[in-house]
Length: 200
Image (cartoon, rainbow, N blue to C red; front, side, top):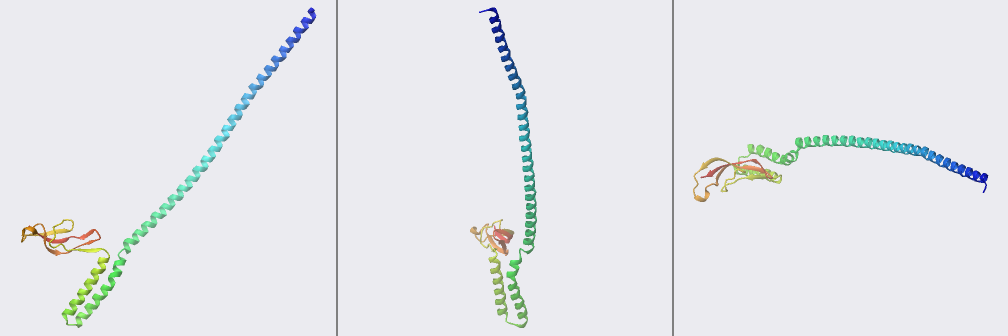
């Protein structure tokens, strides 16, 4: 091979190397310029998702606020309504009992009017007893119970001792010997303790 040909080949080889280098350099430059573009796109996407999340969160907060305000208004209305109902119950709670007692009042008025005309004591007494029994029957239906504890053991939950008297026998000690005033309880609540004399 001649020197000329060798020289040409080396030139060709060098020019090919130069071309490869240029291609590599341009590829590197392209990749370098592409990378910041990718990063910018990623950043923009992240900003968009953050904005959409923020918008969604704000919408949720507004919805929850609205629901809370509605619930508070409903509760306030409920509270006012129940307070009004309680006041009405307290004011008119005894209306049922009073309505049931009205016939007894009518009977008492008739008894008073007839007592002036009649001189029959026994008839008057029977009339008063009937009225008393009618009244007690109405009150018992409403839950009233009489506490009349003669010969029962003394119990401070239901009895109030007003006197201590000698017991006629040993088994009557600590028991109620006499009841001066009957007590009353409504269902399980004591309205008035029975006033009693207890044996000692």
